Length: 254
Image (cartoon, rainbow, N blue to C red):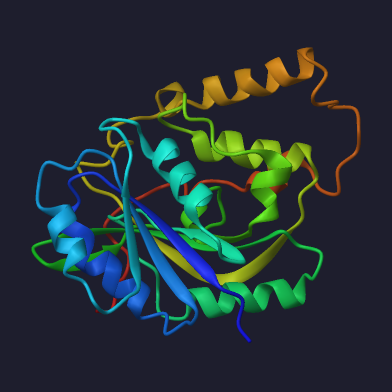
């Protein structure tokens, strides 16, 4: 029998993208699966739209408006009862077959606590979607599938971080030497658009300084010993971003 999966989707006024995001979850043809939609103060009709969706088993819950993505994801993790947890933001997409491929990744790496695929960025203009990067492996939570016990070992996401909470979480995973299985296929289409939280940000604006400051604080408190060898270097564990992004890449099918 397949392991059960809960997909946690934070939503805040997500109507421009919700239809496509939920359709991409449906395209996984995976069971047993539930979608946990956590609303963070939507002012459009996102809640009403989600209540009308019948194609996927959905549970809805709210967090106080403006709580942020980390708080919404944590609420979903706490409420889930599945074997595995996945994350998909309401403006991103999964290629068909992502979840089965990530589940299979655990078989290739039986000691792994999460399976991680590749990411490819895209933009949509005038109804046409185009890739703007080559595939790359980096720390976006939506490109991975997680065993529940990871959140017991490492803790939940840092709700005080509005950006780079994924970097902070992956750094804590590395510190605990949490093993991952690398799946060599694109697992996430990451949408770049003007409404994104990270639009127009670069360098320190992403919040990387705060994430690394959290690690320094853990060292000072004796929670992390950087002299202890891990099975992989942190730089290799975290991966790297896509580098140059432009509109010259191929059109995204569908």
